[in-house]
Length: 212
Image 1: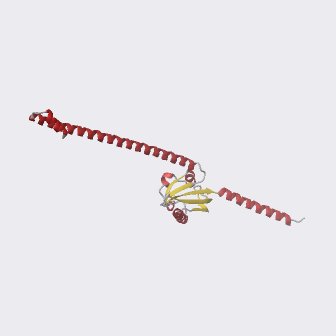
Image 2: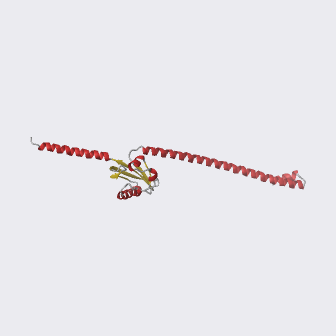
Image 3: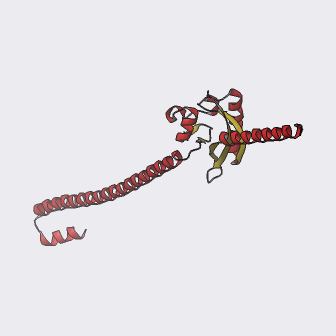
């Protein structure tokens, strides 16, 4: 080594040369260890900085998702018609306040069930809903139809029932969203109009057959 040759030129005494060689070896070990420690410390600081940045991004994203969920929950709760949504396994993942009020349920006891578990619906209707939901989730289509559904007030309500299946970007089934529009007041009004029409026609006919 160049350092050894320099020592041979500067130091003629063999014993001194040996001691200096030992010191030189320990010095190189110390410097190498110090450099390695500095390198490792730098790498650790960079890794910690990257982890801190990742954690901050995850925290920010989590906060954004929580805010979005809160906004959507508030928005859905302000819709007057019952709304529900399910996952790909046809289990309820949530509903709005109107659904809770219409059927006398609470979300915490509702989430995770399937329509087959809903005792407030007739068993035959539950099987029909389950089959329809499975088809909509599998195909991603929308079903619209009229349905007579018992509400928590003890009455059977005339409704427009609609469910729409949706898929993930890769095309796999993700779940469905359903809405129930109560048209009982409209149906009652139509019935009242028909009865009024029949009554008017009957009165007109009665007047016509009265003797002049």
